Length: 76
Image (cartoon, rainbow, N blue to C red; front, side):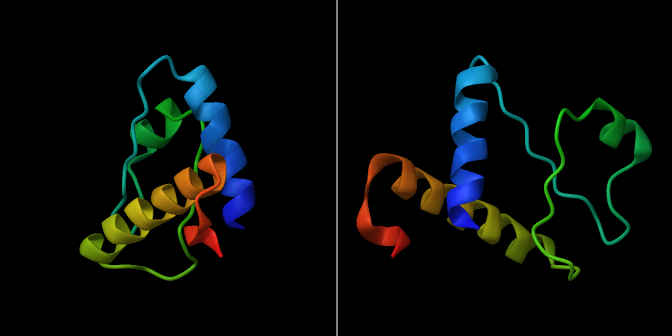
């Protein structure tokens, strides 16, 4: 849910010391070396999305999280 993701984002804001890296994998996912370096993994969908759509979904979800965390009414 958006609320659950917002809680994760809030935790990231507290713990990443100004650095957050997001990687969008291809149709077969990310290379094992990239996955091994990740502290967390997040799936946008069980579907395979085009990169342009995946980027849009990530930005929109981060905006929704921002709205939840700041009390902005967009989330509803």
